[in-house]
Length: 111
Image 1 (cartoon, rainbow, N blue to C red):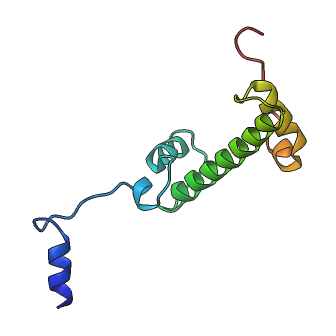
Image 2 (image 1 turned 120 degrees about the vertical axis):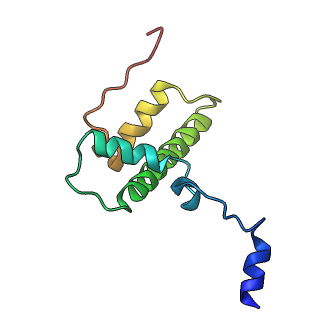
């Protein structure tokens, strides 16, 4: 009975393939992160789970920073996230400040 259900669920007996990004329900490409880790020689050996974890961490940090920047922009009545808002958020949050202490943000084009 169990096998019949499995057979009916698949279309034509073929299994659909999903990327690691899809399987882990991430937005950041696991394959891209893996390629960067390998090409830049960040690690001597790499577990198959390493790029998945790294992509998840990058996705989380990006979402957190964008959330804080959006809140800051809304607080100041702006509908846009400007370089000034990014700079303000990164310097006002102690954890983000220590993470991005070596990076200098410029005002972009026109400044």
